[in-house]
Figure 1 (tube, rainbow, N blue to C red):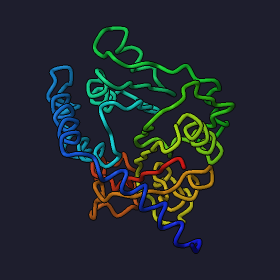
Figure 2 (spheres, rainbow, N blue to C red; figure 1 turned 180 degrees about the vertical axis):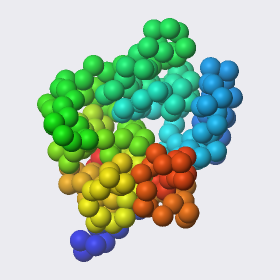
Figure 3 (cartoon, helix red, strand yellow; figure 1 turned 135 degrees about the horizontal axis):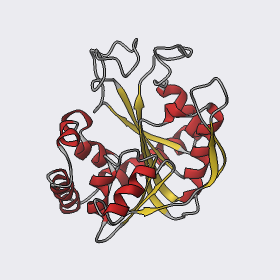
Figure 4 (cartoon, helix red, strand yellow; figure 1 turned 45 degrees about the vertical axis):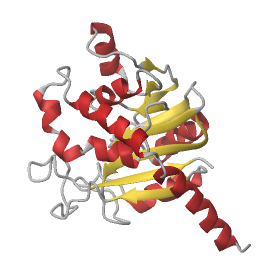
Amino acid sequence: MSRNSKFAAVFMAAFLALTTLSPAVAADVKSKLEAAMASDTRNEAERARDANRLPVETLEFFGLKDNMRVLELLPGGGWYTRLLAPVLADDGKLFVAIGTQRVEAMLADGSLSDVEVVAIEGEFVRPEGTRRFELEGLKLPVKNIDLALTFRNLHNFTDDGRRGMNEAVFNALKKGGLYGVVDHTRRHMQEDNNENWRRMDPVQMIKELEAVGFEFVDYSTLHYRADDELRYEVGRKTVTGNTDRFTLLFRKP
């Protein structure tokens, strides 16, 4: 078998593994996600983002099942955490790691449950005069993860910081485990400037993840936005809430 034929066979096996969920399993996960979205634990500001973020479709693309061990990185205010936790509560397990302060506060006040916070080794370091963080000595003391996720966070780290995080995720995943990432899109090969620094080049992200051992599985156009010209800072009023975002899926061989 030629090298290209072997690659095609591996890619097809990974693709079939993601697309052969039984209708009953897929429908059950969808119904749990929809129930979580309708929960009165979510506020109006969170609900207002549903139409833009498309959580059901996004998590279905990433292959979420309700019996998975899922690791969410940099959960921020817990927008996705609130949806993932109830879906995984009965048969799966949700872990969160890195930048978990607000999620920890929600766990403490009882507004969130069924989530385990992973105490990482290492620390955030932002070199003076820079915007992005390093993740020095990062280790994630959790194993056999089925699915790792991070949403709009890759841009927060330097090249070394992203490499450290991606290597830690690779080590935490079981063989065949999946890694789903979403971030704001930058024009290909464009250098940093004051308008684009919170955008990332999706081709560069694919290359970086492949460099630490991941296989690229697929991409989705769910968050493609034709009217985002990829010119402006993502917080500007003209684009905020409507940025073009790449949605990529990787697999640990």
